[in-house]
Amino acid sequence: VIYFRTGKQRGYNSCEMKLPKNWNDFFYFAGLLFGDGSNSKFIVGKPQLGNEFLRICSDLGIKCTHGGYKHRTPELITNQTVVEIMNSLFDYPKRQKSKNITISHFLARSPNEYLAKFIRGYFDTYGSVEWSRRAISIGSVSKKMINGLQLILQRFGCVAIKDKDEATLYLSGLSAKNFNEFIGFGLNEKQIKAQKLVSKINGSIVCDNMGLSVVSDGKMLQVQKTLNKNY
Image 1 (cartoon, helix red, strand yellow):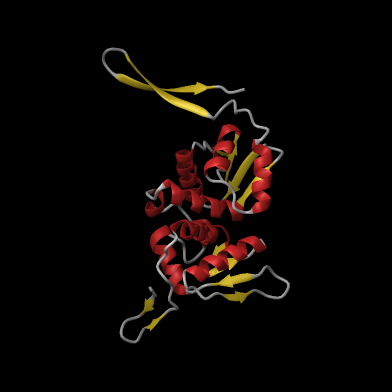
Image 2: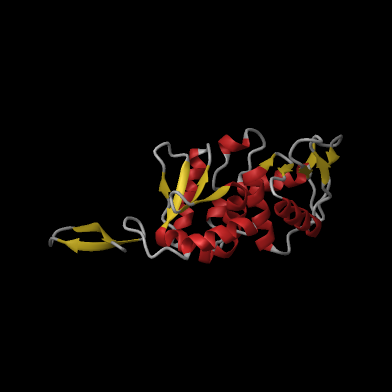
């Protein structure tokens, strides 16, 4: 059991939580907070995500309380120990979360199995399937998050394209297929849309297969990009 203690001798202990036993759930939990979290609160945009959040909290020994006004989106409130753990491991911001989220060193160095669950949680809250673009997309007002996410997605064969404002990433073609295969949505309605989208994809002209070739002129080596166009 772990808990956060404020102050020194006259400090007090925040509510406790258990050490994670299921790391897949723990990383997914972090992804949900990165998407729809606000300090110790989780904004329940979809009932399925609220149920998953409560299930994981129960496994971690976290006692959630319900918040939010009658005619507003429901909230699940955790405790300060959760916030401190998320901040220490994932650089989860305590204030102005949307502008300050990023990919922490801990997360970037985590095994792909766990990293995929974090990304799934984030996409379940903030990601979309866009029929007009034939792409899976996600946005953030934090450029650090956009840049970091674009980088780690490449570990799953997903080459994400930024929009002109550098506030949204798009996955299309084989990148969308790889996302669906190696990461996927946990939210049923988004997963159904994603499966329908990728079932009609044969390939992307620009960004699916980009490799590197090394050439030499006898004096120095040069690395060149090679592009395989898929129609």
